[in-house]
Length: 278
Length: 278
Image (cartoon, rainbow over all chains, first blue to last red):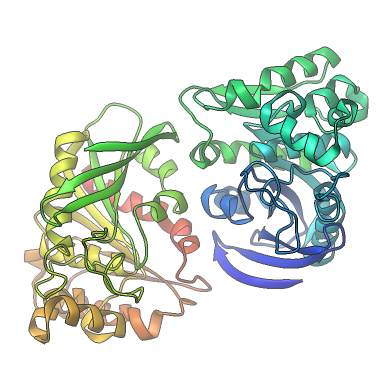
């Protein structure tokens, strides 16, 4: 692993790191905030949305004052493999910057777009080896990264003990962003899409299997993508269907930007700290 | 004035605004955060550093939670006039993005680089006309913008009632960034440079004239520009020379980035609120 940059912030240390991922077969970048004081600390993994890199959350979310106070490591990876040898698409919602946190099975994506294995195996493996982690993990994210947080959380409930999301793509199998990406990465079989769709995962699962006492979703009511792409009501209905507690907060006037995330990130970190430290 | 974008953040409203400035003869951009609740509110003007636009502080400083709580309007203008008809230089430290908050007298800069008049007349005029301002102003900034905050504060003490800076270029007449810019914008007469140098302004003035009960300067001790460009000790010595209270805080391990600003911006906004609301 290579430390590309290091900054002191809110008494803790923020590092930008590059490392080689066996899953993606590429170098991958992430940022990692380590709070001040004596560890070990629980870890919150933050997954960003379409077009983002590891830098968006890191510079714009204003998360580290709360992370320092709460004693949380916060790790924000890039949203896809990148580079000249990596497949891409001219659209902003497919290819580099749009990995959708799953392992692609279709050409030309399969050789490098293995983001689920990257996050759950390679990234966490490096965190465990290199950072003062307590070994307890929460996951959160925004938009495509909200989808990633929910699907990775539901698919790996033994790994992630707390799960929140901002403005998630709640049912990608039933919205334009998701349909396009799931078809490209997984092929035409809708049953395979449902395995990477938080709403289907919830509806097809059981509360006992997931082990989340509650799930926090924040959504801006003035978000232009709310009705066409995000559809948190579908997720809430699926949770209700299986009896999974889920807290969906709709916020008047808030949009899809990092200004919305910055306004409520402290609540999310408190949510994770409460569960990862008990 | 044209509102280019508007976001709800921390319960308040952030607007990106474009307006025509008579001083610069160009359109100018700034961001303005208006806190929730009933005004009028005091105003803190934030001046950014070399290469910045109105967006850097706005997205990276994490200032609006505190501004909302304290009831402060926070306005962050661009750092220079811009556009095809505006003079520029290939270097990052001269021309567009490097206006140094003074009125240039030399070609090719004089026609548009009139940032002192822009900030103190046109920008404040628009704020007074369009935002719920109490008419009371504080000023702050970073690096070149710290220089701007200190020099505009000292040159317009009736306008600005509170003044703070992060990592300011404390004596531009005696550092490479400043010498280059002051020569380009003002010509070779060192006496003219001293009128736009916070250390000289302090040393040549009186406490009674400035009317600041105290001045807050935060500086990272791991800032790579500290010794060669910033030199806050010179400012502290000048303050001591005339008996002007000045609080210079050196912070171990912090660098020149917005992560440093984010770590201490709440202290600065509290500093301004205390003085602008009494």
